View 1 (cartoon, one colour):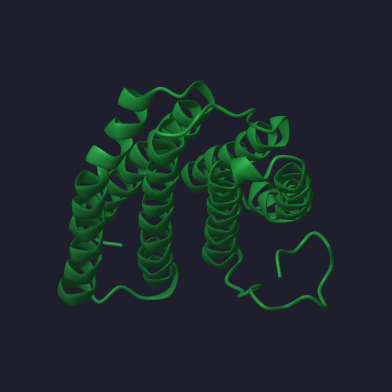
View 2 (view 1 turned 30 degrees about the horizontal axis):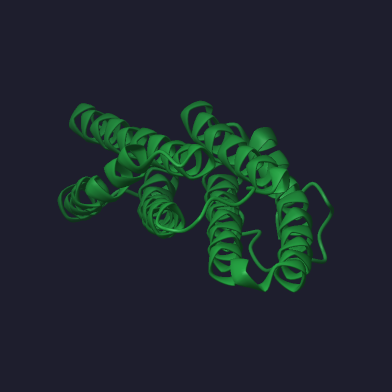
Length: 225
């Protein structure tokens, strides 16, 4: 690899990690804002959406520039392809954080209801998945990437439990329907954040091991699939 290409890839790595940190902070703030009914914190997430979008575009343009100017091959090409895909997933996570904030704003306009503790647990697990997969990207750690994939099943199980709990609450107190519906939407957004973290982990496995593990349920539990 030429020195100039190495510098460009190092710059790209800094950009994608900056985007990851921004998105991670937005998810944390959105969930915390919902839990505490902190309208200012919730609004701050929505206000930062354009910043995340701009950072995503910058990363994509940098990837395309490297591809055009240096025509990387082998491991370098896999790296650029992985970053392009990770970039898209991070942008989608940013969108989901904004959606959570929007649901939170609506919740704040309604009479307070109890937030299911399972929602907080689910959010904490999803945020841990995101943090771990970003750390795995820094360290090119395929072991952690596999572990992130495996942890997605627990998120799905909690999501199903929240759906059942919301259904029971609506039957018990129909006047809470609108508020409970927002809880259901927020749970779905958190579940999707975990899905995107899993996508990133799968892309890291491709980057590190050179194999595609998406849509391969027949492989061992250690693999994403």
